Length: 240
Length: 214
Image 1: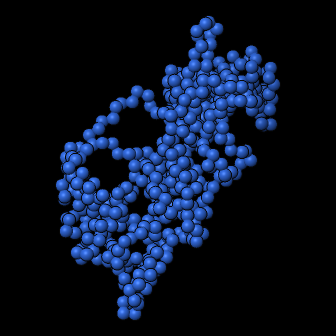
Image 2: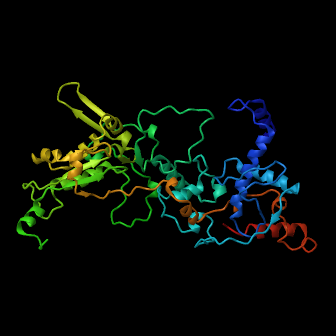
Image 3: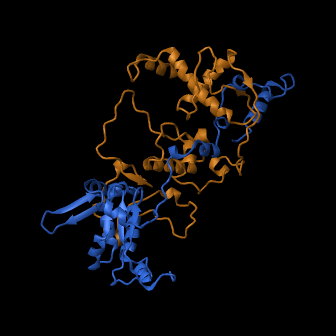
């Protein structure tokens, strides 16, 4: 299956019309590797760490710079393969580093990270620092089997991430535009919004709202977050 | 203030002040309720519906208001002049594009008491789509009212120190299933090979390496 895919990809030219050479691909793979390793360095002391600093690295690929950025979608597997190849060819030294001081979770025995840190029912679409830990660089969610979230919290986080995107709180996590694409100048600036449950283009206007006892309400926020902790005596209104 | 003279006390009690409110990233309904309270004079202890003691309210940046939910697409403003065929229905987005001050104006109009004083109170409400205010109004302003909604910070507005101070909730390697672990991590932390058999060594490796749930 993979051989067929690879053959198909080789036969088809790339989106830009220019096929990447082997050296460029290796460069990209090394960049992905370095990002992964930089992330991995912050783990515990049980694994030996491969010290690849933020400066240049002397490997058989040449000198490259490491950039500290988010995990790319296909980065893990390629990074792992590159690391394995470099280790077998004795290009990387394994060094055991002592643990850096990290805050410990108050409930370490739980399986879901939200329950480990006792954050259930306590986060919202505005907690961007929390939400950004579970998203890719182009704004999509990371899979559950990678992050370790339980099903309910994964859906809640996905809903909050959606609302944060629509509120414009994650401006750097947009999908990359194709190379050479010039965006059209927009006639109307985008409208400010928050707590948007539905996609902007999918919603229809309510031309007939109805009488008070059978009014068609406009929904705000999401019912999945209805159990969130509230410090004011007023209840949470989802139907406005 | 009791230290004022009689005339100064009279003036301070019954003066009509000019208040400013910034509507950037605020829900128009909350802005309108604050405006209507001040326009009627209900924030003063000497309030009476007939005594006309409301203040002037100036709202700026009405172009940058933020509706919660999908109200930009769902909320519909309807009007009928009485003539046949003149029933117009506009969504909030279309209304806002036509006139950026209309949404707040209609909201305040609906929140004021439905009597003849409403029109005079609406005359005392000044709406500006951007933060460019005329000089004579700027000279009159005395107080700025606090914004009803707390504006959430974007991810780009957090400093690197704040981002580093936030703990990492999960690390990738604790969940990844690695096919050939020896190539990556090595076996230096396990007892030497002649002591443990092959199978035990694998089990030991798994237990010792993946013990950290973080």
